[in-house]
Image (cartoon, rainbow, N blue to C red):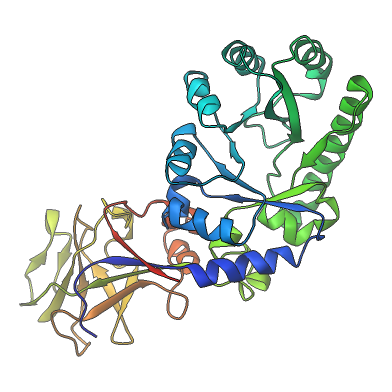
Length: 366
């Protein structure tokens, strides 16, 4: 098949399928928050957010405020949680009606000051239950109560935490301990504030493995994009992102010739090498070079030879009947998905998807 350039196919039908599958795992009363951070896991956040709004999701989430601002400027009106707000971002957060995650007293104090002209501005209060990234501790609850109840310009909308190993059933005890601590935190918060709080805890794997603890809302990121972090569940998901390229040129090289920087590949026999216009600047790590990964050309595997360059890489096509202009499949659900490619380099699908450069053209299948 002849194509023109490297491109990503974003299948919005598959996104909808994955959303519907996750919804079947939760109660009709439970809200769902969809994570569109990191350029929509490599797919492009605005088109993803629009499709999710069409499907009436309850919340969106981004990592940083500029991601949320971009969505607002593109017409997205859904509530948006900013998972890792920075102190200098609060003016933009308030201006664009985003909801910050407040996770420390330093951030809480800054939020109180920046929102002083507001009335009951909503925020999500995060507790650390074992992941040991962001979040308050159980012992902070009384001080949180003192600060929050002293100001009428802010209001807790949700309390939440994040599971660290919900995809690994060998770590069930660890996850159970996280859930138990979150229950204790929730109870203490209700007692000291004399009010019940809405809660969210479960991520994609939490929805699949611990749905009993769905509370008022669940969150999904990687599941929406087609991966369940478990081979038993992956079959129910449909990957949203396909990555394809083209054979730009084919070289015939002789035994002893080298290919690429630092002579990374030395031919042991007469060979054919195809040049593919994608490189480590596009998200194909240099560590995939020298035969660690392969792509599909005309239904056959073509291994990378030599070192991956910034803007291109080389594959061995000696045994493949192919021509310049032929399609190269890097990621797709039928041949090699992002998880399968990731395993060849000891990483995970998240890294593959979120590393895909913005300079790659996106094509939307609606």
